[in-house]
Image (cartoon, rainbow, N blue to C red; front, side, top):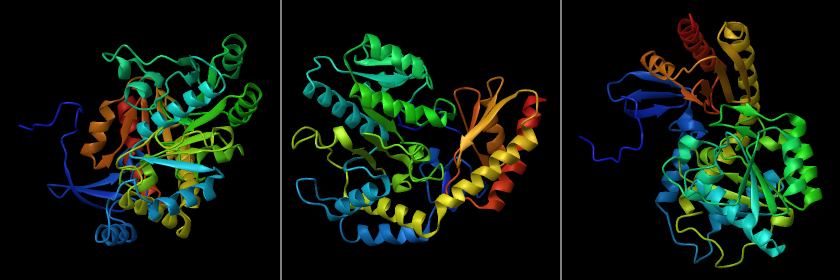
Length: 389
């Protein structure tokens, strides 16, 4: 009997090793990984250049503390700001920590503006993490249940509804920021209209609010751009990253620009492990390989092929409500709960996920090939057809 705390309803499989888009369990069975650790394994499994870089760094230095200068951290901050157009970066260990930093930063900016109780606009069905502040920002009662009292200071509006935000602007003068995912991951791969972020940027400028984008799941090349908001041409004031940034090595980042930059001073925020040399080398190597191997282009082309093929093969089936996504972030919404499909796919040697109860979520690694995309389609489409029959 395991002594692990019972926080996960784990599937009855354990993996021993992987290579690229494939995993092998402890009995030697092979699986096509279309989930990549929930958008974490950007470079798939056992990428040789990543493994070599991590081995070399472990042999030199793993951790020293942020009491000192960390050269690898400075290089990664420079690279992220070069790719994003942002100004500065705070490093932590996870997405919820990155969002905690963003929430604290928004409150400090609000206080600096003379707002006594600064509030942040958040979205229905959002997911920002499981710490007390980030689960309070999250739009899921399932995630929040049992942890009340929640952290105050969040005003919730429907996703993709600018009029609702304008209404808040008219009646609530304590708003300091808007926090939104360009694509809701846990919420069911729900995408924003391309004009939404552009108009939201304008509203935030008029109101002197921070525009804070949670790109923990949709960032780091997953949508075919370095960052999902770059499809719209805007620049946020705050952007959070994690998941795929280190290709499996834990790292999070909170980036700032514009009116959010230069807010934190020494002592305002910190992280013991944040930005340690090993994590930063993992992220630097990930970004280098994405660039050198043109994997953003592959994310676009493979993602487009998957979307088009899914529409052709199962899009017209009764019971398929929608197929949507961008790059290698794809959701297939069914008309009824479909959690059973995860076990059925596992039995067939395919790793998928179901989120929001009725949305099949596909998050393959960015090394996913055209051939592997075809294998995914050949395995998944009959499963969906049989499930809906």
